[in-house]
Image (tube, rainbow, N blue to C red; front, side, top):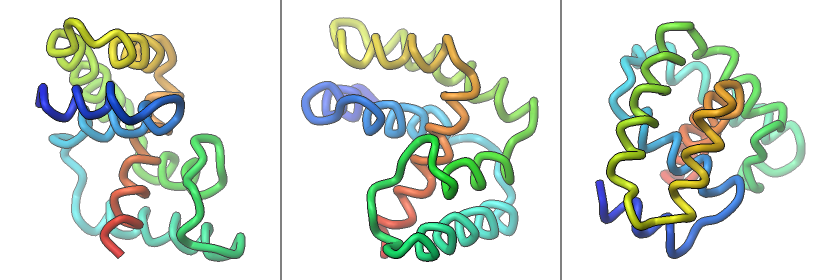
Length: 127
């Protein structure tokens, strides 16, 4: 995990860093395959309806909000928050990562949207 965090420190900033960190933290979240696939498919379709399914994913964009809404439960948000806290202990000496993690932990709505953006970004990268 430390190698991923160091990579984020070196190369990601702003919303990209938030999405990557939330995606890393949420990697072990229990998301049923059918539910995850349907939410991601809807997000990709919303991106395509906007003209380009491979354009940059925006944290407050329609596609990200739709994925976040489709997958959100209080239990999943709690699990994501715990995972973000655990990442914080691994981010010692990485000030950019630490600041991004603090921002995510301070705003659970932002953290959940960042996680959704990470899932959507993962899908687009696989295509």
